[in-house]
Length: 211
Image (cartoon, rainbow, N blue to C red; front, side):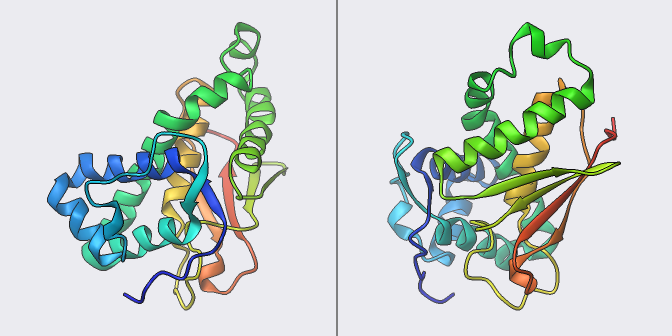
C-alpha cells in the first residue's frame, strides 16, 4: 500500500488504541502486526496510541486499517473484523460518554424506545463533534434515521471503491444503538460513501429494531 497521506483531522488517541487492541483480541499479536505493517503503521507495533482524549489518531490511519483488513482477509472477512473493532470502540470508549449524555439516568431508562433514540442519536453525534474532527448530523424520517458523517475517518483518502467501506463506523453505530436502546439490535446500512464518489458518508438506521 502507498505511504499514508495524513489528513490533519483526528480522533482521540483512545479511539485508536481501542481499535488496535480490539483487533489484537480477534486476530492475535502476529495478525495485528501484519495488518499494521500492511497499513504502513509499523510505528504502532508494540507501541499503541496513549490512553487519553488528545486528538492524535489521524483519520488516514483508521482508513488504512480498514483497507489493510480488506486486503488481507478479503472484503467479507475484513468487513466482519472492522464491524467488531467498531463495536469494541463503542463499548470500551464511548459508553462512559453516553453516561455523561444522561443516557444512564433512570428517567432516560424508562422512556419509550423511539424517545431514547430521539435523544440518544443527536447526543452521540455531538460527542463525536466535541471529541474528534468527525462532523456528524442526524435527521429523523418516518421509518428511519439518517446518520451523516461529513468528514469520515473510515474511508479518508479512499476512492474507486465499488461499494461503501465504512464498517468501523457501522459497528460503532450498531453498538451505540444497542446501548442507548437497552439491548436492541438495529439494522444499519451505509447508503452513501465518499470512497465510491459520494460527497458524504450516510447511514440509514431502521427505527424498528431487528431483535
